[in-house]
Amino acid sequence: MPAAETPDERTVTTGGGPADTAVETIQREMTAFARRARASAGRMHPELSLVSYTLLGHLEERDGCRATDLAAHYALDKSTVSRQVSALERTGLVERRVDPVDHRVQVLHLTEAGRRILAQVTESRRTAFRGRLADWPEEDLVRFAAYLERYNAWSGPQRDDT
Image (cartoon, rainbow, N blue to C red):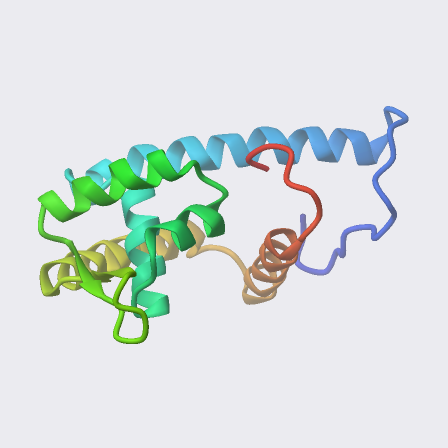
């Protein structure tokens, strides 16, 4: 889409028209994006999956949190988060600390090694994104960023991983 064009703000309907075609294209392209992101995570750091990277990023943003908070935030099963966290602990990227307010609770925190690896992978991902988007006009980048924020801010019922 040229930089000067603005997408139509009409409500998406189900009539086989341009909006339906656009939704199908969005679904296909987001699936390709997710596949590419998962594949590139291993190249950025062989021991850090996309899920692990995401969990480490959340722990850094929140300066630690409980495993149950991670599960709730990402709408994941507690056992899934438990396996991921255990793997991160085994590799020395995450540690558990007693919550100073409630000594019954353990809070997950990044270790120094976890912070270093997260910073390295984050910079590698930034570089990859910059390279992929290098030829985009600034207004397209700003618009794309706003659309992604708008899409991800939706708080309706979660039916699947859209």
